[in-house]
Image 1: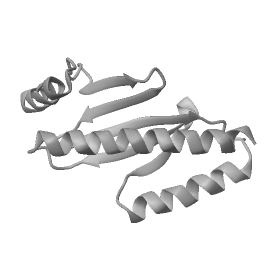
Image 2: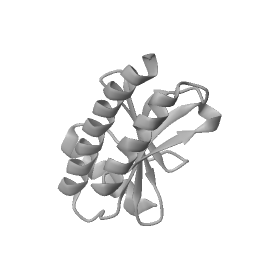
Image 3: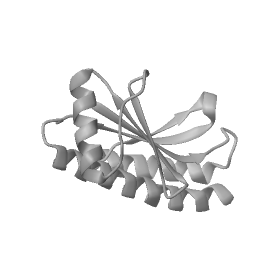
Length: 130
């Protein structure tokens, strides 16, 4: 776990943020007051989890259809996957960072993930209103 702590501290230093993993091996980020992302340290990867929208399991078919279309596009481009967390009634974007050797590459992937998360949030919020 110390290796993960060293990497996240190095990234935090580059970003000007004090980043660490907590006792659950997670680093929680709140960006722009409405983009919630967690970085979870696993054995040799980091799992990015980004909250997209709260979502009732009984909402209309059109949003579920759109989620499946987007999920296919994400998979085809190796940009993560959308997952519904039933207990929290929340839609998440999930993506794994498998190469932890280059902090600049990790920052680039994190930035892309957050941008993707924000775009999906904006798109799917519109569908959730229907």
